[in-house]
Length: 355
Image 1 (cartoon, rainbow, N blue to C red):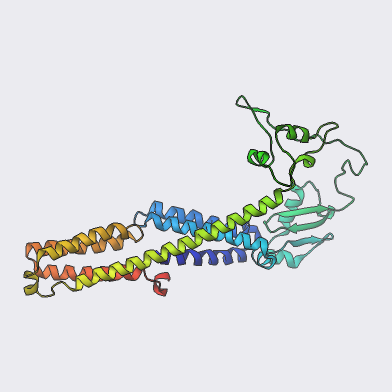
Image 2: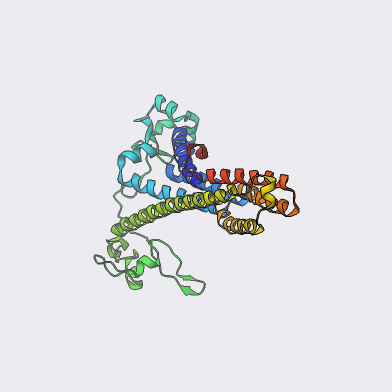
């Protein structure tokens, strides 16, 4: 299971680098950490579902690691501009002051046909009407027209157009619906530096003829609450990641220790036919019962193939001894020792397990 943890972290880093090299147009609306996490989550969730040999705990721990890394990386990107620039990049000018920048088109692997299509989608007939075209971090293109081709607004004509407000549902399923841009929970919550924001306050806040604007009545402390909430998410992600690392480490050390004891007991069994014939059957029964108890624990976090391999060898060893087939008993004992060593080695932190 420790190898699963390390592999998940490695694949997260590798995918982040590869997605960054692919360019912005491959990312779309998602930022790079979110895009990488989306790829990993879809694959990691499918593996335990389609392969019964993979323990469910492997998939759960891998998903927890990916989600924690995404939250942590996103929080660090918000706080550190250099890391944000490294991961998300910067906006790239494709057209600057009406001039097409060929070197930026080559660097971003975007053709003129794509720019023409985006210009037409934004309602402009020709590229000569455009002053700037910018490729944003999300992979979308922003088109800014020239001053003499921009759409005329009421402000350009010095018209004082009153605010019309925003339409919203008043009654839903026979119940009054209280409108809140932050949700009903935020609407009812009071902040030390905010004004009341109940039903009556929202009615007053909705723009109407001669009434106040909504921004005048809504709380002013919400940005601080958002920062606190983001910090809480970061702390939870760090705690979750540390818990997964601790659980994986403790589980690996426990399995290795118990398998070492079990392998020592296997090595203490007779190796010759004469000694095997004189073996006390209670020793084999105790060994079998110990493995049965150990198997239920190991099967939660170890590949099913390794568990069944050892289980088959221990069962055969016991059955061959009872039937007097001591040669087969010795062969089954060797298989059990080899399977126990392989199972124990699979849980150790080593480069071979990761690769």
